[in-house]
Length: 370
Image (cartoon, rainbow, N blue to C red; front, side, top):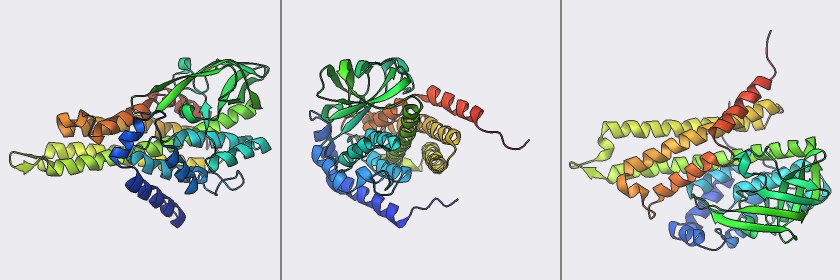
């Protein structure tokens, strides 16, 4: 298989890398995470101007002709710099709307791509522990009642995409942030993401899809979101690995750089293996996303999520161990990489959830041969 990127994809990756190097240094990140909303609107406007917000959408859906690969490339470079802008939720929102294939959804996509508004997906609930298929929020006609958790980007969202139970099973609804009956509890996660619990008390909503089409759209969008999340994790893991390598080269003990100690070289080798395993499973998931086999796609994405969760924590923990006490300080980026990888390992479900998804998808896959 050919894993090389096209010239257009290389250019996209380079543009993101140049942006974070020029505009997103460590002081800028600290300023942003200490701000009220936790991300910079002018950076989001730049994302739109550079075309990143539509790079992962097909032209038929109103995007610029890309797909999951483009989203993964962007997320990987953002992950290297621990960028706090809610790119993964944006991927989920745009893919949800694209899967609906309606005129109303197309209008919403257009406003998202140009950065005019932010629509935050609100698909998780506390009892589901990251499983978006667990829905207790109830729809009574066009009114929603329930609580959605970990809604990223809620502070600046103009509206929300909310899953709720109705007479047809599960429906997908659009809820305006300013609607009566909508309130939020904002908080910051361990990895400095700004999220909110969205409280719906008879909130007015517009039904976008219901039953099987809604469930299919949600699963499709979540697969795309998990791919982008895997790219973000890979970028953070890779950056933590090479930052640790550089530290070992300059830190001296007994008159020599500690990078010469064989035991530490073995630890670095273990970290590199985890990074490359994550990269390989991301490539496998990207390959599955290009196919038509839904079960193969689910299994590949679940496998990538399991690897980024276990491998990411391994890389982050080893990076801190090899730095010593300085590795846990707020001022050094290594502690922030670990916190990011810890948060990602539990974002949209933990290892147990995705192992179960992998097993179920493999059991349901068509058998080959006799």
